[in-house]
Length: 238
Picture (spheres, rainbow, N blue to C red):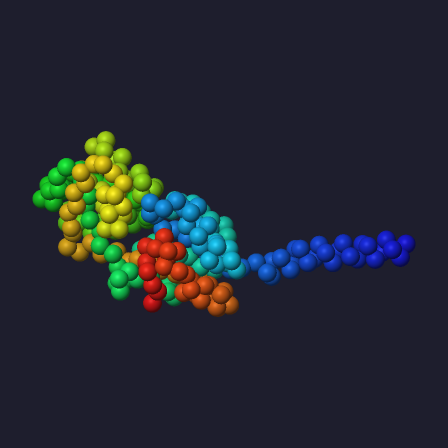
């Protein structure tokens, strides 16, 4: 009887350790959304390797990020500034930079010849939908000098087929993604620079009230090596 009682107490203590001790040991959760030509899983594995004490989940679609934030709000979100602005409960604590700048230039990329900005209002362009439809329309309007029709895709790699199959006249991409497209595609890709098309780079937003979490998250992000930072489109934090 005494042995059975001791065994029951041991099992109960073990279960409590699993249920509550495991929760206490679990790292702060970070959600990441950064559309690029790198696979989300590759970004997730690289970040998890460099930040073993944190729980990291990388999303390939905005809708998936929004749904998961609604179900299980993380302690931090890593995303472009425009995306992070859509989550008011998160305040940017680290701003990514590249070559000393916190923004990157966007260009219009087309095949064969540069797109004519004078006739752009009668054309259609492809974009990655990093915001909801209404917000995305406003985002594009702030970058291009006209009001073209917008063809939204969910992933960066979906933009090039739009050009190849002539579904759009041009695609709106960052200069970094443009250079990757030019490396990987045999098509003659031509860029048109835009005067005011500057977009904020990835920032780290910390959830309001998560003071303890940011003590673990911010140092871990600041310690990332150049190769891992490059997967997020930045080379330093400020």
